[in-house]
Image 1 (tube, rainbow, N blue to C red):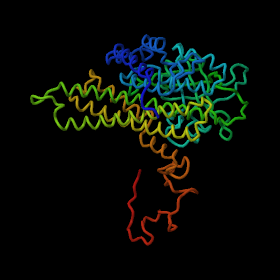
Image 2 (image 1 turned 90 degrees about the horizontal axis):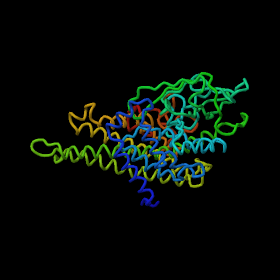
Image 3 (image 1 turned 120 degrees about the horizontal axis):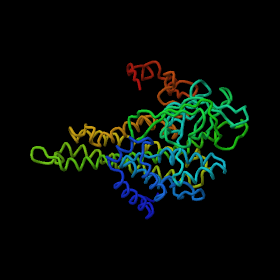
Image 4 (image 1 turned 90 degrees about the vertical axis):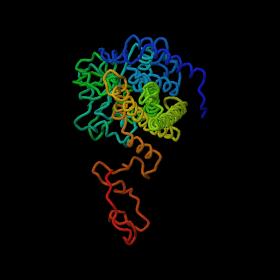
Length: 463
């Protein structure tokens, strides 16, 4: 790995930081989230047409810039620094890569150039609050997040009326940017319970039977939407195999997108954490108490030093995860994410995201505390960073599950996709046919440590 950035990468960072510093201050952010789309449309057009931000990681053959995940991560680090409200995450990080990976050539040629030039915004809708599970960031990849054909989620059936090829029925909560997206990528279950498969469908914003409701979110800079689909006509993303496929291609594509998204989200969280730290340092240098700046007090120095170390460590992890994701995609969109290189990138992405979320939470909490009374006020921007940290943890975490999934990928728990802290029935991780027996033949469930029990009873611990 070459740790030095190229001239082009430094220029992307420098140009974007200069523009956002001028156009996206705290007051502009607060004003933008109050608008109908939830973001500054003029600024988005400028970012798209001048800098090519939506198409930064799209192939040049479809109107994109042709960069890799590392460039997109650097850009999102700068947008995270100012908490930019925009459709960048939903469109460029989640939706566009899925169209590129799963869509037919005709669908790519129709949609990707419009996304690259900022003329089309898109959002990914997965059932319930299962976005991190669908992307393979947490939990076992067993497809349970899609509903398994049971009630709930979104169900798809072939259209018998001779119109659209498919009809969708169901409801999806917490769709990022879904209220203003002009195109929805909806994950739905087709084929019933026994032969069910998860597929992706394209639903335009004006489709009959589609109801979108903007929700009140903790972090207003990340608007969320409830999507209701009432017999909505939809187009299958990708080729129709007539029901012979199992939907594994969609799962693999989602996992590949999750690997890149984890690195990008980690970089974005690092940018927010770094900005919160910088604002706090500036404040403690200027704020005086007992005739001296409060930043000169040893207790304050130690707290800020801890935040600085956490942010720098998270930045290094995020950069490595972005580099690993770029290397994993070097062989093209069709490279199998389940290979050794893909697994390494997925592990790096999950761990980087966990570390970045922790650093962001730490920096935001210390910003509120060290700003004193003003840090708790609505007028100050500290609460924006605090809400972003809390919201990211809820949307893409929690941290311990990100790390548990990374450990499973590395095989630290012995069996692939085995719940590390017990299954859904509360049984321990060593239950079942894959349990690891102790050398003495005991399974550890008798409450004693030694062969003859001389070490005494073991305390029960609930995780």
